Length: 125
View 1 (cartoon, rainbow, N blue to C red):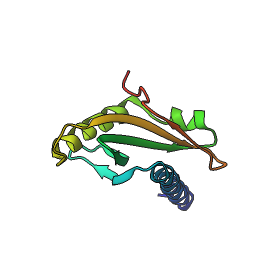
View 2 (view 1 turned 90 degrees about the vertical axis):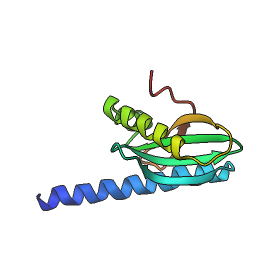
View 3 (view 1 turned 120 degrees about the horizontal axis):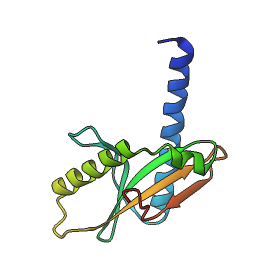
C-alpha cells in the first residue's frame, strides 16, 4: 500500500469517527442512551450507533462527505443488507423485557460539520 493511500485511509477513518461522535452527541442531547458504538454482528455487518429511549431502539448509520447528498450516496445495497442482518442479531440478543419499537436513522455530516438526521430512513425499500 502506498503512503498516500494509507494517509487517505487514516484521514477517512478519523473523519468517520468524528462524524459518529457528532451524531452521537446529537442523540444524547435528545435524551437517548447509547447502547453500542460500531456494533458488529457475527455476519460481518457493523452498525455505527445504537441508541435507546423509552422503549425505542434506533439503529443509526452515519455517513460523512462534502454535502449531505454525497454522504447519503455512499450507502449501498450490500451495506444495507448487512445493517439489517446485524440489527436483527442485536435485537435477538437484547435483554429488554418487552419487544422494543425500532427505527433506522441515517445521520449525515457535511464538510462544514452540519448534521442532518433522517429519522425512519426508508433505507430498505
